[in-house]
Image (tube, rainbow, N blue to C red; front, side, top):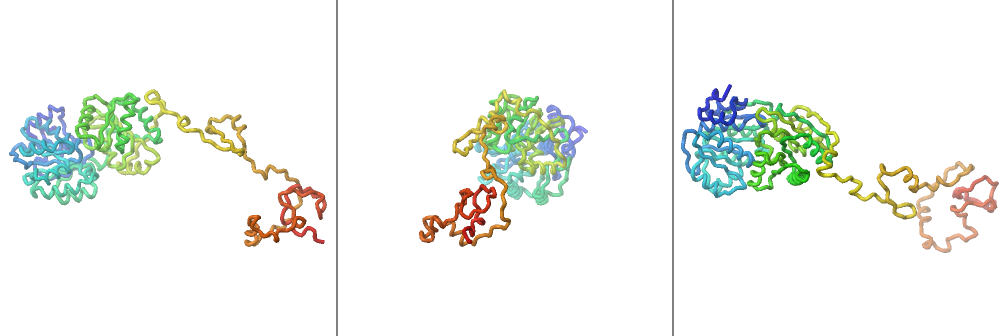
Length: 505
């Protein structure tokens, strides 16, 4: 089957041929004829399967006849991110070059005045993010009563970003008799509820199992310590990566990693949500034209970016949401090409990994990166931990401070010189002795507490005279002590239970 068999116009087929495509993908082959017939559609397909062209191509022919009016777009395409909206606009420019269709792009980060001027002239195709569209609608700059065709693209991503309430509001302000196309990689319950409410007898098209990963992508997981992530990444990039996108969970990680890559001699750039729209577009253009071959990105770039020739995707951070994994790795292996996707897994990522493998229905093969730190020594030497921290200090029994080297660096001589604390009781020589086996009776609590009173607090008259005091337990008894029995060889302290009753007749 080719595009001519799908019922497209000759001008459109020529534009597709000029772009280098001759055979439609599975989603395009099933969706395009139904869109041309005016049916509602639910399209479920993994990323990178040509979903954009599946609705852009038939829309161009459907809108070929008709006339636009000021502030009343004839069709509306909702996209979750600015980048994806800009990419869809590029597709309309590329495939609609033989048609005279007007188009406007409503996204944040650019001048609202220019967008209002474009709407006042009248547009056939309005491509917008929900936030900017609602802003201009509330200002009275847009009328949606003339919109007969609605496309909700990346619906599951809309759900993740919290746009579903805005989409429901927009749908209620559109004409009831319209054609609605909904495309998504997955079909969670909220999206199913949305489609049941706003689509009329839709045709359900599913070209791949929901959330399945592209079979043309070689996947792998790399178990690594968190502090070794950067070294491991540098090693893998040095191994022959042509073009790569590296995904991080946090914007600060994106900035720090890109800085380290550039210091290490790599041609890298970055894209994240804190950047101005013009700066993000500039970085994407550099990546597309080969000025840089490594793009460090947050999930703002995970959905919908169609950049040819991406050989590798690295998940520097394991994605928090399993669906994001499918969309991240979908940046490679597009349009029949092959690609590789590697995910760094730390001990804290066990649950995230389990959720990902459960979603895609397979176990990601584990790979080992040999000598993860050595290959980056020239790019950015890593300081040994022992030089970054002071050696731990300990105090000897004499109170002097002594530095102790790490355990694996101390020689046997050092260990021999190190003072050893010995239990005094074990050091005392003990001779054979005869002891009474009768156990010592425990003193009543009040007597024990009275014994613990400070010496000065006890009444002087209660203290025994020197001649009546019992021998000190801390002194060894002499053999000529009064009332001594035969010499039994005892040379230790005098036990209390043996001192009781001495001197009695």
